[in-house]
Amino acid sequence: MNAVQRLDAYLRELRRRLRTHIYVRGAALASVGVVLLVGVFVWWWAYSGFASGVAIGGRIAIALALLAVALACLWWPLRVLRRDEGAQVFERKLPHEQGRLATYLDARRRGEEAESPLIELLAEDAEHIAAPTPVEAIVSSRRLGGMAIVPTLAIGMLGAVFTLVPG
Image (cartoon, rainbow, N blue to C red; front, side, top):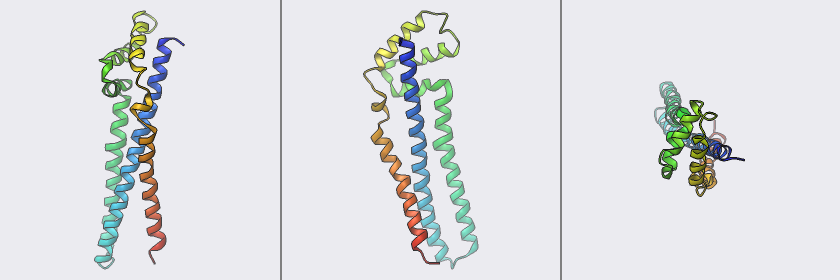
């Protein structure tokens, strides 16, 4: 396996973990938002004497909150990660690369990989600098697991509310 293949494998794994982090964070924020809004609107609905306008307003507010989370926490970060093959995100997560990853990915996009022997040297240098920082250190499994617990608890709370509340 040459330096280009090793660097591509490293970047592919980093991109995968960053994408997973984006999805898990979005799910956590969406689930917490839904639980909070359901709690507020159920209280408000009961306080208003079960007015249909409050129920409809609550549904609309929950839908708008989910749309906002989907745009702000899923669509936008995934768009940034896809732009330039993630070069900006990679450089922000690995500042000691000092532009090597952006240059490498830009050269690959332009198809200079086969033409220039400097790409191999750039890949080797970037891979050598990135090697001491495993992908696990950038996006840890512990962090992903901690965030994945939030939607699980939120769904459990909603399930408990819907099964325990009479009527």
